[in-house]
Image 1 (cartoon, rainbow, N blue to C red):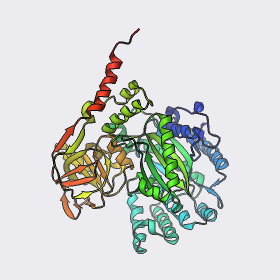
Image 2: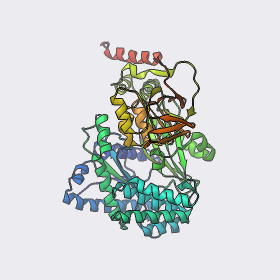
Image 3: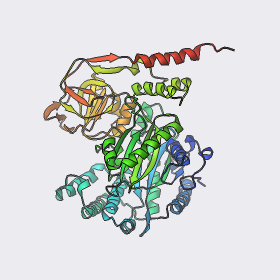
Image 4: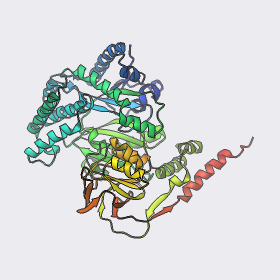
Length: 535
């Protein structure tokens, strides 16, 4: 028998929340958020201990899994008043990973599970919004095809591009309901032509999605990340099955990511990215450039104010800077997850000092959080002298860097092996580029936002990063790009400023400064900790 943990509905008290080792940090944090009375979609969680058994093909576990899923779906149905796969009021769910330590974007997620043919018609009946229903259906088929059936993303991307072109649209966001229905049908054909099948039974879909998410623990991307971050000791991931809330229901809906403080500089101000009429992966994948808080505030000022209150509450509750994923459905704000924010070393120093000053953490705790970072890592870098940038993007990770242009991770690895500094330049960047990110001195992307998973990884590793540079065009197979119309060949020198978002041609000189005031405080903590205490 498999015991699941329920979140939402009759939320558990904080004392009864299982440990991160049992249900992963994502689920444990979500249970904590629910216990604070903050609105979260209900969920049930399969434990970390199942990961090895599922991967090993244990038949008894497979049988027990179906019983656990049936019971969990019953809980979600009772809590939401919807039915899984229903023709009139369908429940759709997301299947999300979550290890005991954060691994942003390295494990799989499948959204809109249960969006069968019948459920698609049910969404139309329930909402009166056929565009939304067909958007959910095509998103499900793409997610399921890639994650569960192992099909290449390019198959779906080229199919979508063909229909966007046929309709003379700029992107999939401009497609109407009839066109999205054609996209869904075309995706079904892509899957059928691969001799695979997206089963139309919602429980079969769910079981397959759960097993695929567990299996992603052993994927190359996840293993490489654990090796780089010294997380090889972790035994596996939990899997959370959560009721969908929909950011793609129209103009009064959206999805976003918010940091309670700036994770690049440590400044005591929230950093918020949002995409309207979109789902969560649209933001964190890095494939689209989101709107900033200013646009969010113009469109939905009350929700921005509500989000600020939530960020402050979560920061106090967890005594650390939080990275919060949220969804807006028809004007209602839902928190999907929260976690300690990945931050640059420079931000880590300022945040630690500020949290001590604010009384949220002790000096000893602040010192612990800075362990493993030497004083050189806290340096503030800038370019010497004045220069004229060739292009600008959005600064996503602070600092400056100069290196030879590389247009994919393989080129970055090759150049780094020769001892060269490398700037990785990509149309967009995903967590599959983890090797290139790790070896580069800086990253520039044409699309994406400050809160994408890859930007998080860049900050964690202290790599200056610029995203959303619309003037960048990359042709990786041809090993060349254009920056503001000027050709850039592989190996050309590029300089970037992750604070201002400015990009320069050539190699610029770097000036290094130390944050003396903050470092003096850290030295004082350590001296007081080491000095004998009066009896």
